Every structure is written in structure tokens, then in C-alpha cells.
Length: 188
Image (cartoon, rainbow, N blue to C red; front, side):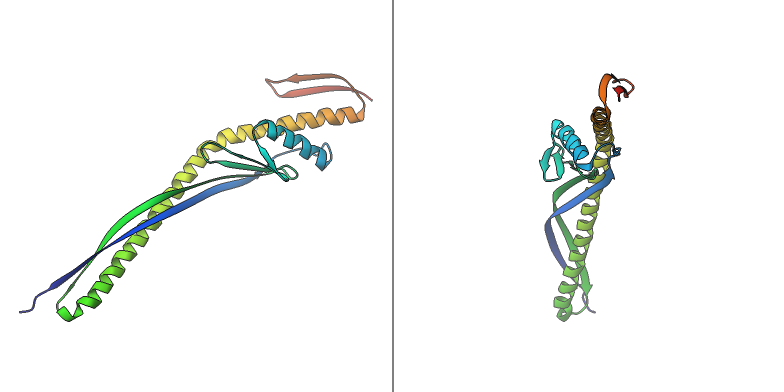
């Protein structure tokens, strides 16, 4: 009668998993002025809202890690969020062998099995983190969209005022903050 031998190994994995999500959009700016003049108005409005300028790009990083970058010359907007988490995992691998001479080979196979399980669990942890990042970013998009719409409207209104001044003498300006309407009376 033969005996069965159980080979059992334990493996652990400590890893930092990272996840990032983002989206790109474009500010709707009417070409009322030259590209340089419009870029100047956009940059000034963004700086007033806490953005810092890095060349042609205005950047602001929120307290929750959301990074907003606006190219002032093209109006391209990039919103990203990245996060990382420490993952500490352990897994066991077990095999049963009938021959004691097969124990070394069984140990190697059991270790491979445990490592494979750890890799799968690490991938799952990474995917869960990515999903969390995506949910957090989606939660912030509504606020950011309304802020960027306000920036676009303000820059368009400022561009209209400048353009009206270029066309003639501005006699009257009426702005209704509630409706967003703007009336400019110009003498040409």
C-alpha cells in the first residue's frame, strides 16, 4: 500500500498597483478675435480660477488629485485622475504525490500555481482600483463641466466686447447674469 504525500507551499506578493483614467474635450470658443488674443483672454480667465501657466497649457490640480490641463491656443482640455494602492496578497499551492521522489517537482508546480493565483489577484486589485478611479472622476465631471462652460461663456463675452470695441465706439453694454445674455450697442 502506498502513501500519498501532500506538498504545500505559501507565496506572498507585495506590489503597488496604479490606475489612471481621463478624458479629452475641447472648449467651444467662437473665432471672434485672433488666436493670440483669444488665447490671452482664455489664459487670464483660467489664471483667475487658480490655473497656473506652463507655456501654452494652463494646469490646475484639485485637492482630490484631478488634474485639468487646458491648451489656451487650441482650447483642448484634458482631465485626468491617477491613484495607487499597496497590495499585499498571499496564496497557497498544494499538490499530492504518491512517490516521495516527485516532491521537488511537485513543490515547483505548487509554487507556480500559487504565483499564478497571486498574479490573478493582483490584476483583480488593479482593475478594482481603476474602477474606483473612474467612478471618482465621473463624480467630478459634472462640476468641472459647468466650470469649463462658464469659462467658455466668459471668454466669449470678453471677446465680443473687445471685437465690438474694434468695430467702433461702444455706447452701451447690458449683461444679464441670470440668463447669460449680452447686448452691446456699438456706433460704427
